[in-house]
Length: 193
Ligand code: NI
Image (cartoon, rainbow, N blue to C red):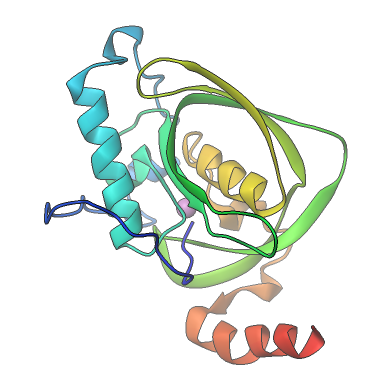
């Protein structure tokens, strides 16, 4: 996902970010492969995960999936900025993740995507999800996420199955360029607060 909110401080050196591919590249419409067991704990996976986080942060994104850098593998990076009383969720990488909705509740919210630059649209997502995944070191990870945190994870997980947020929109009528979105939609929502 893309987001124009603040970026946490990072200690990355000046390594160049990976190239983010855009809609039209076939890798974005492919189902990605599970990361093989033997890769966990390897320098290869750790290096790639680090590059993925670095690329996400330097691209002003809150999420970046491996297929978006033309690696058809089931892992993604994400982070969640501090919202209201909720603390920031620092950059994290989930490998071979599995999601399950908790309850029936859904919520519409605005999304953008580094592979679909310049556009935003309203997307319904499950409000609360259960996440099971492995860390880059191979540890089993399990947690629940809700609201924007759940949204980011659902958006990134979709990339592993060749799905982009446009596919999840119930109507394209909300689709907007970021500049116009900032000008007309955001200002209206702030007026409503
Ligand atoms: Ni995306």
